[in-house]
Length: 380
Image 1 (cartoon, one colour):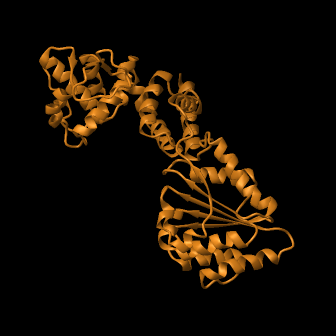
Image 2: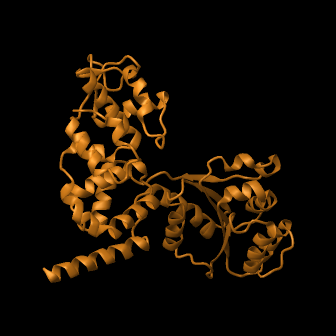
């Protein structure tokens, strides 16, 4: 037993290091990887200048995608064939700061943005072997707002100088809307849009389960992964989720026997506070009326019982009911199709038992907002 505990501890520590360094976390995005690789290869091999902007929310894998592509093409910070010039809108907040970085790589003093194109042309023509300059603009949306002259010069160079590749990264899909007309006239770029590399919950669960190498039992992991998948399935959020999971591994082992294999309880554990509150309000109403069915309009008067920390409204209420129907926790009656429009007068029924709801409230007690118990508040 003692040896087994040591082995288990070593496994958890190794997994923490594996997740912390991001080893193997860039799953999927195969089409996007190939597309970006081809864009950069075109510049390196044929000397054609290219530009591409990678869009995606925070944690979606923009930087990982770029670094994986550069690594596959064997492109470092400075090689015999290429130079990488990295600029960040949150760091290089003035033209002077950006020009100092560019000038250092080009080995020339730059005093204004208009000199960049000529300096690049001179640098490329002065070497006997073809050189590629790869500009990486992280948070390019900031440059679009504050440093449009710099952007104009860089994109103008894309049109007039061979061997340039510009890669922008941003979470703002509307970043080019900030640009002046003269700048917009020079910008021509390809796009890559990242959301999540996982096309379904099954893909997400299978990846997490394999990544953790069986360290966490499947029944427990399914409940936790289902909750995380609905929150966010980006590589960045998954990394944080896995680290939290591994750092709290001992607590998970202690409490895992409290978790039931009942799939409805698993589902109730993974839904949002508002969704759980609506389930409780419906259960309260059915208990009061001693009926098996309810209409959404009957619950409106109870919405005020939801704790103030939880955002709720009548408009959200019908949306939440539709989600609960998708989860299988609420049923539509009167032979309506599951995708039918839900109105205030639709006939619905609850597909969970009062004891299942109470069990989940006990299990989630520590995380629920203050006074959440009063939402259910029934003598059943």
